[in-house]
Every structure is written in structure tokens, then in C-alpha cells.
Amino acid sequence: MSDPHIVSSFDEELKYLMRRVSEMGGIAERMVGDSVAALVASDAGSAQRIIAEDIILDDAERDINERAIVVIAKRQPMAHDLREVMGAIRIAADLERVGDMGKNIAKRVVAVQGSAQPKQLVRGLEHLSELALTQLKEVLDAYSTRSAVAANQVRQRDDEIDAMYTSLFRELLTYMMEDPRNISACTHLLFCAKNIERIGDHATNIAETIYYMATGDRLLGERPRGDKTATVMASGH
Amino acid sequence: MASGMNFPHAELTPNAEQATDHGAAELAQRSVRVRASDVSVFYGAKQALFDVSVDIPDRAVTAFIGPSGCGKSTFLRCINRMNDTIEGARVGGKIELDGEDIYDPSLDVVELRARVGMVFQKPNPFPKSIFENVAYGPRIHGLIRTKAEAEEVVVSSLRKAGLFNEVKDRLHEPGTGLSGGQQQRLCIARAIAVGPEVILMDEPCSALDPIATAIIEELIDELRENYTIIIVTHSMQQAARVSQKTAFFHLGNLVEEGPTDKIFTNPEDKRTQDYITGRFG
Ligand SMILES: Nc1ncnc2c1ncn2[C@@H]1O[C@H](COP(=O)(O)OP(=O)(O)OP(=O)(O)O)[C@@H](O)[C@H]1O
Ligand SMILES: [Mg+2]
Image (cartoon, rainbow over all chains, first blue to last red; front, side, top):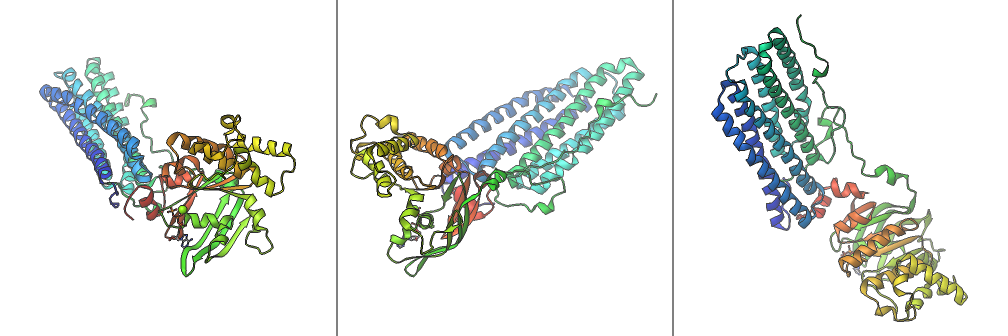
């Protein structure tokens, strides 16, 4: 932790941004977890609540942006203070998108309701979301400790999600080919899987932002890219 | 709270590389116009500057920043030997201008001060006409002999200082009748008139309003095409805006120097961080 600023209200403003970002992180995490649970349980009521919650994240992001702009105009922050403010803006944008992903999954709950969902596909989706939620949780922990090391670890693990997503994609495709009546439900599940995979990408973005906030340097090099669905064919047959 | 910790990169996996250059490569290409090696300054028994070594790049703006009393002006005054005029001041170490030791006994100090001009905090035009303010230096240095030559130097210096259009109809009115910002540009014209290589500026904008300050900053940016500029400023933002290199002084020591973009986004030393971010040291 660094020393306090001579102007103490500057510290208050930075703390406010940090608190708001952490709050957004908690809400986004919950929305994603709940939306997948609602999908698995076909719980339309819970899905509705999640959809309504999204506005909280939109408002929080707008608030963070407005406050950050005032801080920049008023304090002209330098060095890690500046990185702190820029980081809050960027992370808020990523978390807002994570919320959108959760909302999108929740919206599909009603659509897949009633249609037969093969257990193993649902379990695959749950597993994928567990991975994404772990990434999200750990990157939010890295944010609160400003740990470049932890942020880098999160970034390194993104390929696990990508690999899992690719295999799930393959399974869904196979399932659809087996019986065209599955296509509608499977397409929705496919979009859900894609949404979860993108949550992993946002966690990676956040990790890169945290690394920059903590060190002032950028993480270089291709990050692990495991989404190979562009070339995937249905398995089996 | 923001953490000032620097994480050792060794802990990180190999694909976490140091990425940002902050204009270091560009600075490294420039030749060195002024080189200070282990410069110390004493005022009587009191040491004000401790073994300062720094290279000042050619045709660039170098900013000196640091808390009041840290020795910025003291160091600046070493570069044109203004400390010679201060009773009891003693300078140790070496300062080279174009590779030449400026404290060499055979060096002509008057000529040195023509090569290394200075602009002060408070605009200080002579109580003479605008024309005479600019013509005075070149005349005493024997650079101009005829009235036509004087006119040429005055006009071109005022132009370079971005003042000519504002004063061309009143060149023979007193310089002290100009606004603060105009007076400061008159002082810059006066410094330019003797054909310096280096221009030292000690808080040149601290008495000016934001508009006059912006005009001087714009001027500094133009002047760096042809001159090596060193500016002392208490405004972090000004240092960040006008300079390519920044040196941070603290208690008579040069703590950190480097490309300006680096110093203001990612300084290495905790004292630099604390100072530029407005924290208690
Ligand atoms: N003529 C002098 N005689 C004795 N001590 C001096 C003299 N000039 C400066 N000092 C001392 O040397 C130290 C450095 O002073 P200097 O004026 O170089 O600081 P500075 O960084 O320019 O400060 P400021 O930002 O306030 O202009 C201070 O402790 C000051 O008191
Ligand atoms: Mg001074």
C-alpha cells in the first residue's frame, strides 16, 4: 500500500473507484453463476431476476466513468494513480460486458425450457462456467491485491476454458447431427457456451489491465489461444 | 489503494516481458550536448548538491523537477557558471559543453554565457526599449556593428520568440510596458539574440496565466528544433507536456532521470513516485 496523498480527498476518490469496481465484480460473478444455475434448473423466475439486475452494472459502469473523468480533470493523476484511474475505467467496461453475458444466458432459459437437454452437455456447460467463474474470482482477487503475479496466472489459464469450449462445441454439433429435433435447444446451449467462453476472455483482459496497473508494463506475447472451433467438424461419424 | 510496489519480473513466466519503451530509443539516439559528472555544490560549509551526473540530450527539452530547495536552480546555475557570482559558492566535479570542460580556467565565461543563455522566473526586461533589450546582448558580444545588423537580429529574435507580430509597431517603447507573458517572450528573444546553443529556463511560467503559459510552452516546443533547452518547473503537468527527458532531484541528489513519459507513468524510485503523485515522502 502506498502512502496517503497530501490532499486526502484524492485518496477518497480513488478508494471510491476501487470500491465500485469491486462491487461490480461481485455482481457480475453472481449474475453468471445464477444464470447458469437457472439454465440447469430451468428456473424462469430466477432468469427474470438476473435480466433485471443487469441495469445495476450498466449504472455502475457509467458512474465509474463519470467519476474517473472528474478525477482526471481535477487531480491530473500521475504514475500509478493515473494507471489506477485508467484501470478502473477499463475493468468496469469488461465487467459490464460480463454482466451482459450473464443476462444473455438468462434470456435463453425460457427458450430451452421443456426441450430435452442431455445430461452430459449440461454438465459440460456447468463445468465450463465453473472454470470461467474461477478465472473471474481470481482476477478480482488479483485486483484487490494489485498482484501482477496472480494476474499473469489468470491470463495463462485462459486456454483451459478455450479447450473445454472447443470440445463442448464439438459435442453439441454431434448431438445436433444425430437428431435435427435437438437443433433449436442445442443452438441456445451453444450460444450459452460461447458467452461463457467470452467471460473467460474478459477475465483475461482484466488480468492484463491489472498487470499494467501494478507494474506499468504490458504483458507481451500472444496469449494462449485455444478456441479452435473455426475448424471443428462434428466428431464421430 | 494503488500500490507503488514494483514486481520483480523474474517471478513471472517467460512471456511476461517488459514492453513499453517510453521514447527511450529516440532519446538514446540524440547526442549529448551537456554532460555533468559528479557535480557537487557547496554554499560555504553547506553542501547543496551531491555528485550529480547527468547527460543533457541535444535539441530536446530536459525538465528538472523536485521539491523546493532540492537544488534545481543550483544545478542549473552550474551550467552557465552563474554560481561563480555567488559569494561562498563552490562547485566540484565536471561539466562539459560539447565535450569541453566549462570550468577550464582558460575558458571565457562571458562567451560561455552567450552559448548558454538563461531565462528567469520573473520576466526581467531592462528598463529600455523592446529593441534595445534584444540588441544589447549581441552588441556587447560584438556580434553586431551596424544599425542594419542590429535590426536584423532584433527582428529575427523576436520572430523566433513568437513576439514580433505583437510588438512590431512599438519596438521603441519600453519593454517593461508589455504584459507578463510578452515580457517573458522578450527575455527569451534576448537570450536567443546572442545565438546560444543551450537555453536554461528557471520556472519561466510561474508568474504567467494559463494562456501566456501555453504560448511559452508552444514556443519551447518550436525552439527545441534548434536549441537544447533545460527547464526547471514546479508544474508536473508542464514538465510532462514540454520535455522529452526529466530529472528528479531530492535533497541535493539526482534521484532518477529518464524519458519523460516513463518518469510520469512508471517511475522507478519511490521518492519520485511520492513526489509526482503528491504523497508525503
Ligand atoms: N546563494 C545561496 N547561499 C546559500 N545557500 C543557498 C543559496 N542558494 C541556494 N542555497 C541553498 O541550496 C539549497 C538548494 O537551493 P536551490 O535554490 O538550488 O533549490 P531549488 O530546487 O531551486 O528550490 P526552489 O524550487 O524553491 O527554487 C537550498 O537549501 C538553499 O537554501
Ligand atoms: Mg529554484
